[in-house]
Amino acid sequence: MSDEAAVDHSEIKSALGSIGLSAMLILGATFLSQGLGFITRITMARYLPVDGYGNVVLGISIMNLLGIVALSGLPAALSRYIPRKETDDERRRIVVSAFHIVVVVSLFLAVGTFLLAEPVSRVVFDNPDLVWVFRIFALVLPFYALFKLSVGGFRGYEKTKPQVVTDKVLLPGLQLLGIVAFVTLGYDTAGIAFAYAVAFGFVGVVSVAIVYRLGTVSPPDILTGGSIEKYRELLTFSIPLAASGAINTIAKHSDLVILGIFRDSGPVGVYELAFRMSFFVVAFFSPAVGYLFQPLVSKFDADNEIEKMDQLFTVTTRWIVVATFPVFALMFLFPEQTLTFFFGGDYSQGALALSILVLGFMISRLPGLTSGFLTATGKTKTLMYISVGTAVVNIVLNIALIPAFGILGAAIATASARLFNNITQSIVIVREFGMHPFKRDYVLPSVVMGSILIGVYVAPLPLEEFEFYEGFIFAAALGILFLLILLLTRSIYAVEVQLIDTLVKKSGIPISVSTRLQQFVR
Image (cartoon, rainbow, N blue to C red; front, side, top):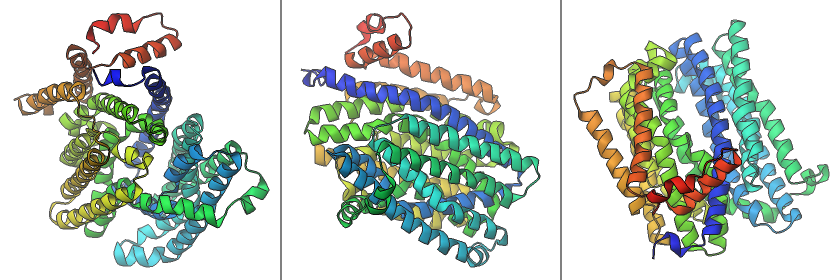
């Protein structure tokens, strides 16, 4: 009997359908968000000198690192606990308690950062230009934290549109408008930092209002809705998770801070843009699938439906790898053209770092949404231990490699830490649940496509002579080839084709996908 036959098709189709519809909405919004974000970064990179852009990046990095402490893993706690609570009153108490914790901690951190901005800028970074940049991001930290916590609330209530509106449209839109306005008015680095940061203030207020409306929270609930019991329940789950959730932020920002300490702000700016491009491999499609993946796995786990968890894990992993592959191929094969096209020739020196980063990130995507899986199944302490180890690996490698190799050392350290993190999480999932996505329908087409990519990379092709648009077309062709390999190796489940059929029909296109693809289905 096949793996697919062992489970109830209707429930898997429903789960995949929920993820598919959510993914389509979030993916469309992600294109808009990333487009606005790219224009914002391009504007800053082209308007500011490289070291000025690096100063803004360091301010953003400090805010994100402090945000780890302020949030303490509570967004993931909300996304897990809200669906599990049976009454509206219990859900309200969970929401209010989480907001109480974040408000207190973020205000404490904001005041401390504002007061210490000058000695830290002058002593640690030897850069007095950072003083007001750090103070600006300190002032906006509580709003940033409340916004991120609200996104966890949206996920807990299984609402996609609020997250799309606030995170994918409103925030990058306001940041772009602010940057363009301040550039037009001739402001310097601190002014640009203010324009970028202040958008979090507005979006934070809007996001909190939406969550409180979803939870039907009244003004008296805000003052009395929390409880010691709920604080304890949330923190018991979230504090271990804070360490595991910190890996993305540490991987993204600790190397920037260490670069700023050992080098000047110029390499920080170059590396940040290389990292930002490479992170598309992680962020292009994974969040769209993962937005509902975690609560669905949590439901299956609560009902002890292991087979459904297994198939959902396998199918979503394959979706992510196939959808991400063209993005990876573009930046791996044509890194210099990519950086130059978007940000100008001054940033092309980050090309090799970009290739290293995208390779490490792509390999780390192969095991699937391991962190989301372990979070959904309550393995937060395990995640904490793994993430502490990952953070240690990342920081030690950064300190060891950056003084000698600069941005290349930072890229090697970050890619290595990411691989360590995901591989270790995969081993835990196999040992604890006996699950992994590496089944024939995933491994065979991936190995074939990987071999083709390696052949292209080592072949004597003049890839460096390609223009960016030519590289883009070439990478897109490789993505189409991957889809053809999936069909030719019969690596698609019938339930996936049925899901595509349903989505196509809902879009008003009178085509029966299942009939046309039947011969390629397992």
